[in-house]
Image (cartoon, rainbow, N blue to C red; front, top):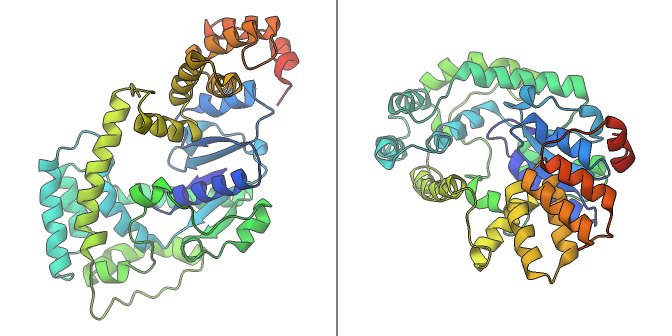
Length: 371
């Protein structure tokens, strides 16, 4: 389990760990950022034999009712909170799906002013402008609350800590030793590089912050910095420089990509599985545990009939997350022996589950074992 605060690189770490597990031939069920408790609960219930890699946002952790005892390895990333505050600022136009460009444009213009003269606007004032423009909520007290919650999780559940600076620099030997697999320092073609990563650096706050920001943010960051041994040095850059590529241009490019992704979600993944680009996108989503994408691909493969084992794998993994149509498809595969040895008892079980019928716990134990 990778536990992530927003804007700390946890998506990148998840991507690299997933690549390490694939390279070591470990067949993990990958579930990226579950939003409902039943997603992981169903996996533990229906597929106890599958090892799971998941990335959980700490902001959602209290609602997911996590079974920490089912995860042998638990990891989190630490990042300088001052860099996090800057990253939060530049990510705000993308949090909500319904923000039109007309609402974002004044914010981008203010960022351009900051690029031309880094001392002209404080980060705090830009956050206030984003509030006025309705660019998604940013409540500093909530950010601090999540940072304190991360501290509690580290202590309570013996969580292994990786520093963002070490991750970006590729210093991952200790993490590799802890996990028992060699975690790569980079993953070619990783979508997080395009959609998440901005500057891939540390100390950027020294160029963004003003004296006003130091006065405002220092009291909020002190506890976290002291707890995790960040140097209490608030010296700003003598000649601050803010690159367009990691500021206004980053926002403009990411806004276009984000809107396209959100349109996909609104369409309910109604992409054409016969189209190569759509199929590749569905495969990517399926690899990260999107049950609807798994089901769509399983249905397409079943219709083709040339990869019954692949059809079964996809249907089983979607069903294990509680996807009802996938459960019914899985029942049919068990009934006819497509991609798996025919099993009337399992066919009956999955048909009943797909219809929303309940089973006695003893039956579940016999079919799947207890976890």
